[in-house]
Image (cartoon, rainbow, N blue to C red; front, side, top):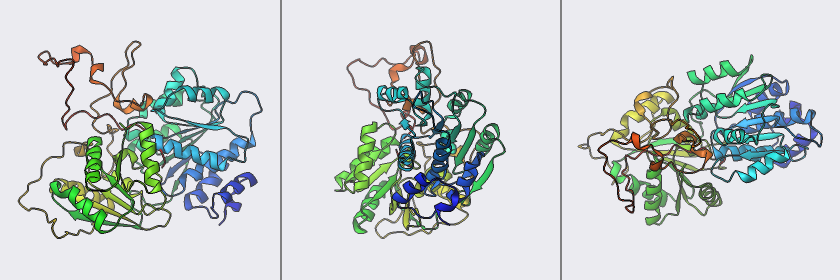
Length: 474
């Protein structure tokens, strides 16, 4: 089957051809005709399946059939994504496929100045791609009107729920007309997702292109048992001895990502870290360097698991296993895409044996293990609780019924008169870290020792980390 058979316009077919594509992927074959009919969709698709073009192409066609005149351009299509990187990728897709159409689009997310975004919105856009936090910032400043939205897309809805955006999503829904087309895409169908779909979608068409919670068959998975204190040494050995040129490494925390990147640099490997506390500029530079081959190792937290879009990435390494089994799927889904072969290696210490069992239960298979000479685990070492990262006790097989809190988040602050106190989940609105000084004095223990004003704050490994700020390409 070719794109010509899907009912797309000549302008869109031309853009697709110029992008180098000739045959639609399975999700594109199923989703495009249904969306063109104006029906709601509940799509189950993991990254790398062509999902973005699957909703972008028909969305562009529907909007172009009733294009606005030269007057005011209201937002007619809204695409919500959980991360900055994914928002940028979707925005790039809209621009690429819509370049021969008289439609305007823009992308808004936190971590950057809001002024240029306001100017773009004032000039009018047909298609808006946004993260929830910054979107509501514009609504609050009355720089955005969603009353004319005809098409709503929730991309990677499960990740948005994981990151605590459900309340923001509901606020956004209340700002739009009831009569609209809704497209929901999710890599997993948890109870939370089904509840959201029931309240959002009208007689939706269910589309699934792959069995849920499965890794691509093109990804070769392997576990290297190793003591925790020797993980970094083993990682450097694997990269150097096997001449891995482009490696995406996942850690459980932001502090761990920074520390590992610094250690790898000392080992002579060009490395960079990417996570929610990095500025947007730093994240963009790190990604660009990694894609260009200037950065050999990119160390990331789970925020990047669905936000990175890197063609033909050959190697993914779990330096630390995720506490949530499904996140393992999303991590290794960065490699082995579009039929290309990839390798996913996991460095597993005794503390992570239960996490490994949970992952294998989800996969319904055992992952091959190989003990490398010189890195044999010490059998006398006893397992210790994993203190950082998301709470593993709430998740074994499948999603929990309650939305998970983000990495290290201790709770959601309330907004108080004039001074808005933001939860860590919503830090992407401002793009900065939450300061301890923002806490009211009454919330501190009465016997708390006052710290000298000129003495730097020293934080331990147990400090409360800022939530993963919605992230660039997925």
